[in-house]
Length: 572
Image (cartoon, rainbow, N blue to C red; front, side, top):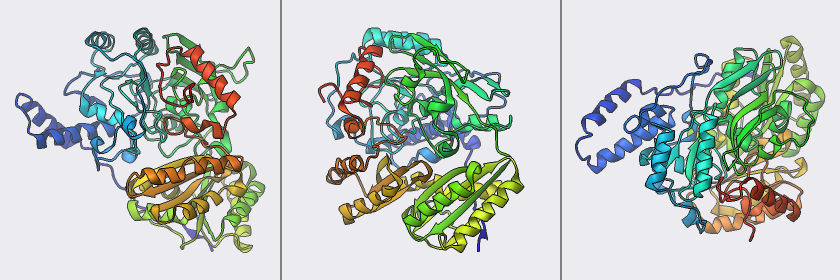
């Protein structure tokens, strides 16, 4: 029978408020002397901790003043960042430079000069960052597999500032790397060489929210979780939910066309995003920030920038349709002994739960094991080869609970489920969701991770995990599969003790060939970024790629926007 979900303990984050002020005074007192190498390393770690835990103003204060900027909603929208995405276990110097590991040749962009720095400093007083300790975090992806060596980080606050930056860079032929929360998994958010990093972190104001239409308009640097918290106070929610919600920016979500945990219920961003404000490579501001659900006048230009990964323009503001917050939410975690039975459960859930089914997530035994091993989360179920997480949300708790109970009784009685637990209380719901949402975090602690975000027909959904296990054998420490079964999106993760080129050669392009043979996609929601750009032909025909390249030339003739990403070069 179903057992009540346990309330799992959640680690309390360290605020560091007391130690922060003390260490700041220490740094100031020692500023006149040459620091020894040990103090320099400690200082770098402390400043990086300040930056990555959301204390950017404190991290920057040793070199740059950063005046605060409050929106009319700032009292309601309280900044928050999780330490989920970053670890201080290793310094970035342990990560090999991207251009060296992948043998990339730098394109003919100009190098930053003193005159350029004078311009940027005048345009963004106190928001031009050249401190290498701070740049360290922006040069390395959070998987710690890619590393650029940018020397300049810019922090605009307005669309006009972004426009002036791009106009200047385009005239000077300076390459630009747009960056949001830097939570991407394919290298689209970090520089390859010395591209100027343009961060949207300070573009974090809510512009307006219309409770009648449910349309939110905000700047692109708003953190997803902060937006959702703000909307919940109005009885609404964001139409997408991601494991990285505590750090990712809405602009980055749109630029990568992120899917996430709510896609099954609310659809993709191509449907919920109503309008965008985008700055093109030459500084032109394209204002398509519509809040209308119907606007059939000419080409829908916003779609060009959804999923373009910052290669066609920098998104500065987003208009998005938000659904009402559900009055009743329930979660069930189920164990089953074969993947075929998970498909049977999925079919039953669509039939019996219907309109209240909001998520159908899947993970295998290895995922459950790595989360419990590295993050010390407790599994409330007995050991099973496969696990399913089902969420329902609706307006009537009695009605929804009755439907969910009937569904659970049926799948238990006919032997599809071997064990299960259900939760309706918020803290217990979060505890169950943590077993799914924190898999990515746990895998980073396990070793070097080769991550693959793919779409496949459900019949072949888990077969590729078994195929890769057999192919790689003991060369892989762990091969796991989890993801959004409800929309056919599998996250295949292969863990090794360290980066191994021979292991990578055994994975690619074999994996992409297999996906193409089974009519899948090599990127479901993470994008192509740097890592997958040369494999686009496994999912798109040659003619389609050529049209994309032509669009890039039209909108960014000099190719300054996020170079080396998303599309192969013309020669390829």
